[in-house]
Image 1: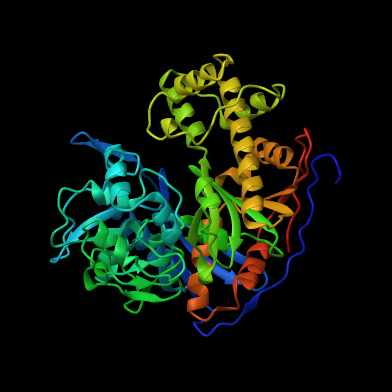
Image 2: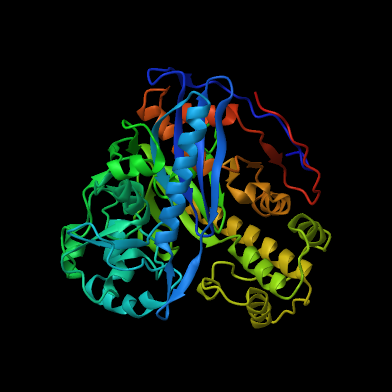
Length: 506
């Protein structure tokens, strides 16, 4: 392996593209994370790959209501409608036609809808503590070993089944995961997209169906969730009221994509072969490998790996690691104190600090809720017997070192548990722009890191829609070729040097 950070051109190959949907076909992607959301227009070409245009960007975040942490869903949906109206206007101006809409968001959270289709309460956020008290009760009904042997889902106290156990009543109600709730309000159709269903703790990882025996064991209604739908299948057409509000064409459909945002992101990893690992780096870091079937061993459960569905029936074998939430919360705290150094300068200052500084367990549950993050990080360092200087650059370096070390441990565990060696690490999402994090990851793993695309989630969303419309053909390999064709990738070799040079892709 060559020392130093080397930017190189990763060979690009054009995927199979046809145009039965029309040469002016475009696709709307609703992509919402835990801190912000976007409505984007996606265009697909055999020459330039996937191109995205951000039409509308809006904030998202938890709000405190009645003593709990919730999502302001009414405001969120209003922004979605505003974005779709703007997308319709842009497309019309360009002489384009929006063929379909795809929706992806974070996982596990849901809204409860009654028979009349009304949302009965404001959806809780997974960052709320209400489910902590239900874990023992759930495990008394279904032992953790049995849960994992069926669902293959890693234990997180905010998984959907623990949240549902905290509900005072579910009589006459149906649970719609957040992207499915948005799709329902757009179309009137109730479905549960499979990649997100696999994060509930109530989904059979082998059968690909609801684990009905678990619903029964927990006293949950068997029809609590709507029927399953797979990525690429049509949810429905837009309701008349939505057409009037947005100005979209009457035949615009909502198409199921990898509605768990990580599923869409992994579908857009520009991998050339199958021996890759991925890190979807954003608010959370999802670190793992892609498999044809789940790993349901006791060793896998003890290591807290999860088996979640991906596009085309693949398995996303991964573990949640702390993410850039730590950094953004620190920035928020520092801004409140009047310290507003630009992120690039802050990262440069952190990079200039010597290696070997203190580290924390970045995915410790104590960092989940919003609070004074710098103080919590310093406290966690003190608990290790070390001392973290009270300087933003030192805190940032601690976060970056801790994330990279967590990535390396997780990838080593994934290789051990699957018996599958990986030759390269792909970092996609917001973290792919963080040169310090990418370089430290290469150093910690001893593997080359390929960074990009930043908008992997939206690209995966658009490509599944385009394939459903017949604009794109082929499997995941062909979709990934199109991503590589339109992405500037940066390659990092294991080194302490931070001098990557970008290389264009064609």
